[in-house]
Length: 554
Image (cartoon, rainbow, N blue to C red; front, top):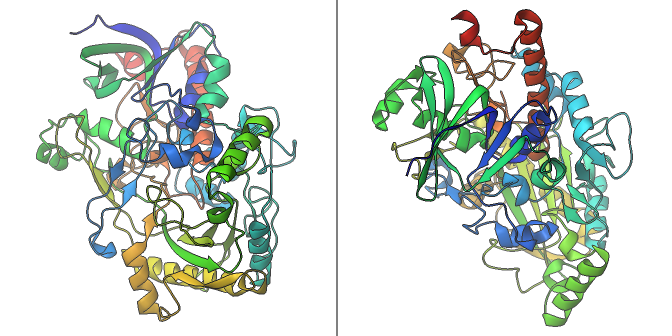
């Protein structure tokens, strides 16, 4: 059944990391009607609010899209799992909670690629304005925002040993990876507030839901955008068996992520004409960059067997320990349930680096083969290493006009020699940390790959056989001035050649940031809100009314 169309000033498509902050910010103006649509549910499970609940929500089809790549040639034809949040809050509701912004040079590089307004000086105020930093306000941090950022409430002996081992291996001690410099080893901060997950939905939508001008629809699957020539007028979507037609007076903003925003564009006939025809979609607007230039972080994990029962493998074993863990969290918001995916990590330079870190380490005081299989029965720990700025680029393309069919994801990992060598050197660096006295004293040996894997070829073979994603897809609708070179949006986040449509999520990153992507995604949503307000004010000053680009020239 088709419902009568409803009309809003702004429609935000995708209630994830960027979409929640954008919708909340736009609705601060009571004169505007703002609609946020999300494919997943509101999410009432307590595991969405408990920090370590990602063990229960990742791979859960109720909250996770459960994407996977096509067989990856450089990874021996393996399909790689790509969890993405399918719930209000998006991936910020199921991720590992690590708060990393990226390096200042990442954003300066964005600006130098023809994107004014996106340098480090430009984006730092946005990072600060959304942040409720538990350590208080400073030059680099804000304390008056809505996004909780805290230090983990407890420490573990094994985590302290890792940090000390990192300094023994040559990394400087760094108490703030989001401060003056990223380089070094230390404890990660988490997106939590008072021991609870601070997802984008909880942080930004929570205070905004009382506004009568903010409308939130969950369980909405967007089939396509409605185009009238070069003007985007609305969206066609589904909710259960009902078909909805929603119209927009001003602008639609796609915030569905590197996969979702790309898929919606292509289903709407926006993209590479040849690829669209092959998928059974009539091309309406040629933008060859849509779905190209995909980047992601590949990780390789060094798994260690310990000689002391000091890992979470041991501290969580048995019903009594689990009961005490639950009580510790319920009554004090502390303990194992307050942990993120990694409690400590580091950023270092391999011999291939120039003037800044090119590898990141995540330390987990536990070991497991996968989230479904549970922790190992022996004391264990894990150090993962990933290349921060891969050269390899992949694609995301639809293969059918059916919106329920997942697109083909081809990351094209390890496609360049630099990427292969950097991953090898990063793995060797992780081993140096494990061999430093503070960790070596408690290590019984390597569980994987084992001491027999030493040469470059052997290490690369191990990476090919076991490497996995850290779930940071980006750049499929990249920002830049030239659509002929593969750019999809301009520096104002407007889709090239179309009116009434912007994109504001990780897909617009010209290059992947050097670190975890959730903080940068939230910053993009905050910057998008400011840009939209600025452009609306400029239009008002020029015309006396706020009109879209097509209407002004009609």
